[in-house]
Image (cartoon, helix red, strand yellow):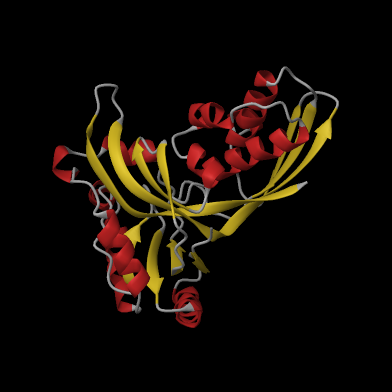
Length: 275
């Protein structure tokens, strides 16, 4: 079978405080968008084989796809094996959740290849905080470390995504977070109303402070995207991808094309939120 593993953006990300377990309590809106990696999956008599294409990735044993396949097959009692080909179309360490989405797609695929009634959510959470969301997809409010999810009605928004090729790990961003970066919860109702009415949404990303301190170029790029005609420009996750809102598909495509010409080394995509 073949599956798409869509990217996500955070339509606002507020870090509320540091928890006693060392993690940070957050409040965010996750939204899947229409750009994705692709996985091809086929059964094997035994074992796990992973081939990656399109990007330089860690050795298979360090890849979340490989770990997800092992986790499912071990929990299912090794009913068989699997071969997976992962085609990377999303930038790596970009704040788009590509690796987490790939892992969730792997769990979904194996649940179809070897159905045994397993609850995928605990397996997903062991793999990473964002992985459970990708089992759900669409639009969802996230709390805790992102694992306490509340599905929300679909929202259609046109976006331009821009990644300048800087790889930023979430750990790096969180290490540079200070209490001065903590904020209150997002106003979800007002935020969604602004997005639906085409107004500037009252959201923020608490990780912009630490990431912009590390990479001032990204703060300058954010200002440039506003000048290009986008609204609500925000860092997605821990970056380095920035996204902005466009009025419609035509404007998104036009701005994306202009940005590609201005920055030929950047990854730029015109897309929209998808349910």
